[in-house]
Image (cartoon, rainbow, N blue to C red; front, side, top):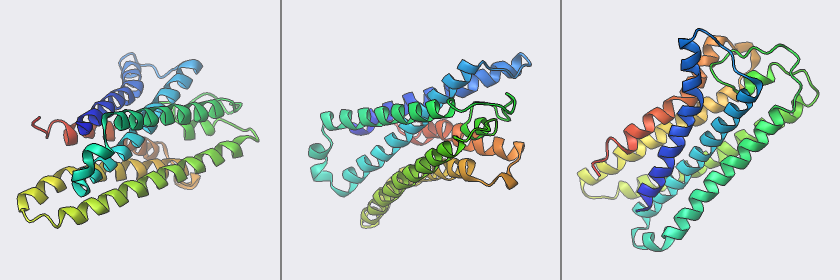
Length: 240
């Protein structure tokens, strides 16, 4: 079914997201080092942004899938045929790739003249921007603002899908049916909200409240928690 097809895509992107950041951090910890090559940093940033962006778009597609399944069940087979599902998944992956390529190329085109130390456990755009003193810094800020607007629009579409879902679920006469729908939809919405809020905070917070410990906590919340929690929500709680 479409739900399991999208779950497969989500699982692959979760695995890719975790694999991009955690193994290198663990290796540095075990070997008591904290270095990464310039190309390695660029590659890590690219693959992390690719997986995170594609995963976010897949989550948006999944909210539409749940909306059609619950609110328009008789049209489900027509609106979400196999070809449509493949096209939507391919669009999510392609958009994530283009978004990551644009951000990575733009970030690493900036001259880094304030040292080479990142106060983070992986290559993150805000930390890299702190090392730049170029006039093109404003170009990167503009790209971040565009990214935040894109994330916000997608989040609004997800919320609208769930508003329609909740309205339909509340009309279900069976209490067990309502509980089953809410038990999946609410955790999904909570994880998406955590991801969006922490990303926006990480990229737009004023420098006056920035600190290494706060930056670390925020980065963990949006880079590690959603990929770790998604399997608990979608797979381990699902008997099939």
